[in-house]
Length: 400
Ligand SMILES: [Ca+2]
Ligand SMILES: [Ca+2]
Image (cartoon, rainbow, N blue to C red; front, side, top):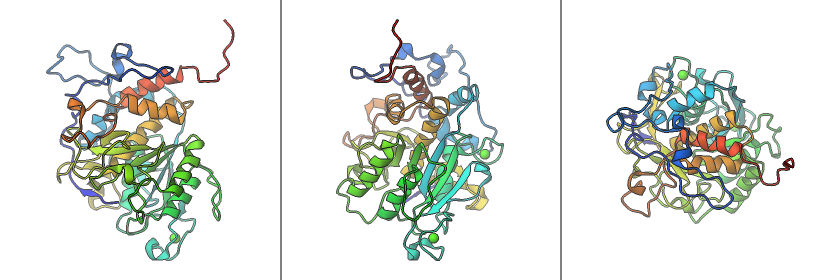
């Protein structure tokens, strides 16, 4: 769980010069979506220079003082999605964050559930014991889960930062020790608990998640591919319809060898900078589903977030840890408005709508790929709306 340092996104406009999403034709039986069919309101704002006469898009900007520095959320099109979200009643959506544990923050007041501490090794737990019911964050890395959760769900309250889905509920599940490392058994049990599956020695989770964010990778495992037991746990969770969103890792390597990022079926997210290019730290390759803003290599290019754990109440940081929650947050927005979407629907909406990279690549080396493109929240909303209106396989329809 390496993290990279610092400072703010200078530009909101990493999508401005890119084309709007133009998904390739879908295989037979799947929804196709052409630019002509896309409601204009869902398209990304054209640059004023290239299309001076384009109609104004309905947008909304949050009143939070860090918003001018949150170019990451502007880049994924949140100002175009928030008006849509607020125009219709939103169903509460629960997102589990398996990370460094619960931090009490006003950004999540009333929507922040303290789950268990799954760190079984007392020497690494920092709270004097192994597993226990109190999953509060301990030690100098406790800001990590706070920042991840804030990106997903921080309040639009005129204080601190703005989150992607200010009505989402977060369940904090502590799986990382004070050293920032995660043991496979702790990750496996945390995954199962978050989804509402039984775990020995734990009361059942009364707030099971529809989305699980894993801004981590399990250390202690050779990088030889998806760990069999983590794979099995992920498959059990996904069989319940839970979307598993995973950070690709920060080693600048092919993420196929990593767990859980290299496991089949999970939605693996790598990081791009404000120019939608791959920073040197970001893992890459065919196991990556898509990219999201996660901060660049330079100290001036990190993601900005509120943190009660950090001096000044602000944390500026980079890493795929912070790219993944952008996708989890947008997935929760989709489920808020379209609660009937399946896990596969969500994955399709998020990946097929992604904005292609300039020149089709996020990196000059074509092997170092970043998935389908850059997360595109308005495009994902449009895909989700179309998918919800599609008859599902096996649906009984009345005779005409
Ligand atoms: Ca403990
Ligand atoms: Ca706020």
